[in-house]
View: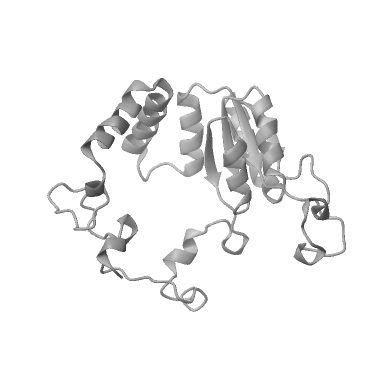
Length: 220
């Protein structure tokens, strides 16, 4: 690979985290002008919402690193943000998990407004999906409706939205149309029990045989 095509994902020095380590010659930070760096730094300081989110998330990282689970961190984050009404957007297939998490929120004093991915939907064929592309062809199968989920939440009195288990691409549309601040609790991966990084952890063993042409070089 040409050096000019290398970037952060190819770096193993982590020089940006350790000042005593020299940046690699393709370091992305070195490609960013000092003016742009200063402009972005001010965005963390001058914007009230940015500053609040960044400080609280940094406090949680600094005080509970490798101690709290994602669920615990999310609840603590919402509480410290002063959120009262929480929107929970979930895949219909993870409503069980969404229900458990919502009950945790309710026990902590939050109000929950939930929306599954099938709200306001019709059969998939009505939005251009062919029968052969259904999970069960020739049967009624409602399409996932992330745009409706987003628009519904936009109309609700929610302070924050928590996203749980949406499909790849459906989350893209949700992020595009949702105007409420949001965070992701987990992503969908039915094969690994919603633990997609398990594939990466096993990229050199079992999944390496399935993920052909995946570059797992660690010595760039």
